[in-house]
Image (cartoon, rainbow, N blue to C red):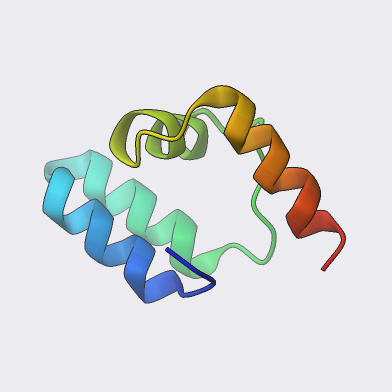
Length: 66
């Protein structure tokens, strides 16, 4: 998805609907920093984007150094 919030929104819109879509869209657009402790975000990364849990943590560490 790169570093583009709009790409994340597009992915959410293609895979989700209803209240879950609204919640994740708001989270993506309104948050200044993402948190792995957020269950909605974690489910989006692992279930919708199908990123393996180990890869989520690797990406997270890389992002922290940018």
